[in-house]
Length: 431
Ligand SMILES: Cc1cc2nc3c(=O)[nH]c(=O)nc-3n(C[C@H](O)[C@H](O)[C@H](O)COP(=O)(O)OP(=O)(O)OC[C@H]3O[C@@H](n4cnc5c(N)ncnc54)[C@H](O)[C@@H]3O)c2cc1C
Image (cartoon, rainbow, N blue to C red; front, side):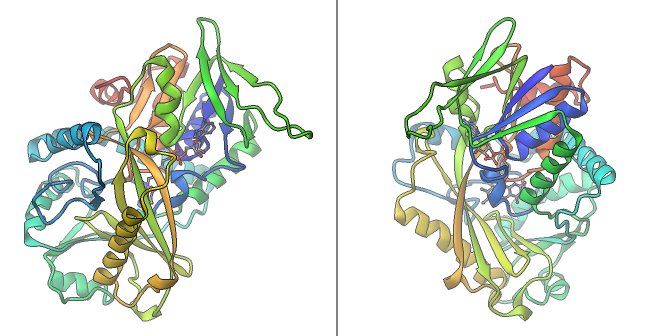
């Protein structure tokens, strides 16, 4: 079949890869001049989510508690956003959390298997590193973390729960004072450079053939009919500076993997994704004092802020701001951006004092979709020729490899690997 994939982030490139592997001809359309320029660009490196990374569950957005999950509130945060956080609240209980994670788990396993397969086939070097340490500040937060630790044990994920003294002994850059409750250490390689991976996978596709990349073009509309699907591309200025007519590209199916723009492209079909836009922030800072830099990646588990070394800089990422759909392309009020960046600076001073020269850091922000039930939106929806691979949330860039496999199986009409209850839970048409 001929398939159009809209979006050149990790979700789009992973989808193109899996469709090609299933024998289809693919055209990826990306509005930027190259791939990995959206949320994929700003990733903080955590490859696949454990129960400690997911943006739902007992530690996420608990009002009135010390931890608000690293989400910055902003004025006018009512209506839709309020309903969204209320739904997340339903996953605070450990049973609901465990049940939801159990639905996500087969997708994580599938994504891991796909990543291992790609690593084995192509030996890509995308700065994979070992060593990830989650730190928990308060005792209150530590007790809320216990259901996640229970899931790590249940799924036999190799990890070590550490006392504060053991954390400090493991990495001398972590200050013992002020006191904190403890940490969880993972040894296996779980941090890597997502945009680099995307670019290398694109190179693989360029070499293999069968995948065409149309960059610098924006899809303005999708049309599906019984025999064919098509997309309209925004007119390009010609030499005289005037626009030409809209270009139309057609195929047998269309996969929307357009990140935060996905809801906008699906709206004309009356489809509403079960996901909310979230603006995330990054500080890329020069190293201040080399001896103060943690030797692995550190995550403030309560605030969901990641501190990781990337070459000669430290990247501090997190500080989410929930948006309304119409605010996706708008700048945040300056005071909200300042609060977000201050939260990142604070985390860096808390867990790696002296490591980053925050005053010289470059700020970056990007928008992600986060669902209120913690699962991405993946599958066929609205029309037999229309598919979605989006909403992977702020953790789990490699999840897109597993969900892309599902899409390829659905497009090919072949039996899916994932269990039926997971496929149903991922369905983009759910409430
Ligand atoms: C600061 C930050 C830190 C993060 N940290 C992590 C982490 O540690 N671990 C992790 O797993 N995840 C992390 N994430 C999330 C992760 O980066 C995303 O889940 C993932 O990159 C989403 O990929 P995507 O392809 O769905 O979206 P995107 O990367 O946003 O890609 C969508 C693409 O579609 C294109 N597009 C949109 N509309 C159109 C159109 N109409 N026509 C043509 N092209 C279009 C866009 O230009 C874009 O390139 C982080 C995100 C941010 C912002």
